[in-house]
Length: 83
Image (cartoon, rainbow, N blue to C red):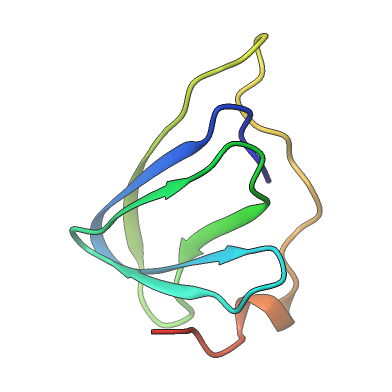
């Protein structure tokens, strides 16, 4: 998905993954803050072995907060993360 004005993620608890189109996912951990620029195709969620709680902050533009794209494939979700 994408966000017209970008998105900030703050990880409250656990370990998660964030993936950008065409890149291996990266691990994110409690206390991390991540900025995703406007229009950047990305996904985020819990890691395959741990839960994650996060706060997602984004603004609407023209009434739109996100553009939803295809589901994340198992291949992309299970790819070894970059440190």
